[in-house]
Image 1 (cartoon, rainbow, N blue to C red):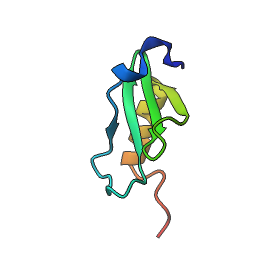
Image 2 (image 1 turned 90 degrees about the vertical axis):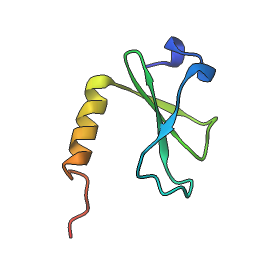
Image 3 (image 1 turned 60 degrees about the horizontal axis):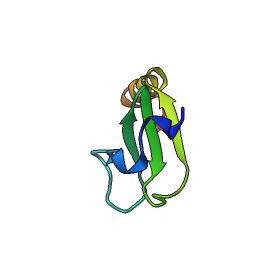
Length: 71
């Protein structure tokens, strides 16, 4: 996915609701047809694009604990 669909100034980046506010988080911005992700500490750094299908799959797995460390 590329940034061709939206100018960087037009993107509406947001952090996770559970962000600790310590600068160690990612931000996401919706674009057609998917989601862009960047490091909140490096606003001019690389941006990774995901299709909606891939992003939704990731969110579902994260919510169900698929990435949690074993206790």
